Image (cartoon, rainbow, N blue to C red):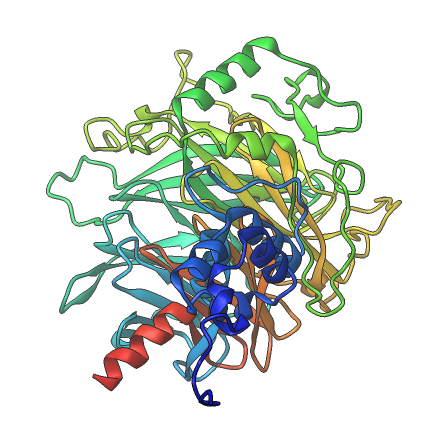
Length: 566
């Protein structure tokens, strides 16, 4: 009599490991990706079939809901690896909430080597932290210098100095100041202080030893002059005849506008050639552009015209509907961006030309244009700014030199209020937060800009062509009116894009596919975000709720739990 407990080798459950690949693929394609991963642990045959690239391509498109025409970033990676990168390695897990300030946290920034980060706040303090322990290393109360609050920080390229930008006390003040601190393992010492007006110029590093600041002089009739200064970070010098500051550019402003939010980008060789070619062509302005620039703005009709690139966000790109679940939108890139992804970025160097990038305006006082000006490397010679200038430069005739103004090489019109900018790590792309003006807007009074939409758009500008190559419409809500609109900082790493928002959330998108990966919850406005430059699985969000939060990946969380268990 046969034993009923004995196994029959022909039983179906023992034959599944010999199932045909096509049958397994058909079954796997109808399973959630988590079940496919569990099935891959059954046996070697199932594991092999479960790694099929076409299977994971379909799972990828289905789960992340991306357009099937978008290919992988490169041919060296598989769809399985791409799925794992987005799901397992993106910083989406809240690990720590830090009450690091007594008031709203306005900005956060990392050192280039990823070993420090700095926070700015309306409590007047600038704090420097260790990202691994999230312990405070240095703290400075800037109110001892009559600052109302700190608003922005930036490490220089070798992470030996920290630029801190702040706002002076005063109910209606537009004046600010920049302070530079030396940073080492056990010291945080003040090196210099530089005036900065208006305060929302913020300031930026030119190279490891020099920084840019601004000043503003009003002439009347809503016209003014914005002057940008190159300053030595350490102003204790041995030679009294050596300059510690130098006028870099002067721009003529109309309609109550001014230069704001400056940054410096490294300029590749190809871009330098492009700028020179564009200048030689002297192409006429777009007929929509009413901006002018030249040496003498008092005669605008005779001034040299500049090329203005108009990229109408409502017409240039295919729009995507709002994701009702995430309210986050999708970044839509054009073919130029997809082709440029395949090209290798040029190495950056302080010896190359640079781009001065800033916000400005022509039609009204709110910043609605991106201005770009090429900086040749000759502004600093032999590591110095040159001799101290005379009190008043004179022409050969002995009369004082009449003020001259610098041309803006390129203007990019965004038709809205610009509230944030960030460069990609290779300085090829500029990401811009903007609140668009309502469709069909008209400006009759420069002091009364058009109403702005509640939604915030993100624009992607190629600094090689100076054209918009990507946009994301209706990403998330903002609620402040035009005259109270404040800065929302965003950050970009090699893999991801992240931004704060007024809806009490930060957002994370994949930079290649443009899809939203996460929403970072806070109890108030999220003002700023920052990736660790050496670890894209580490992100910080800073909020008006007086906290900043640390976000890590599922991979980090698993490794951390394993280490703790051991």
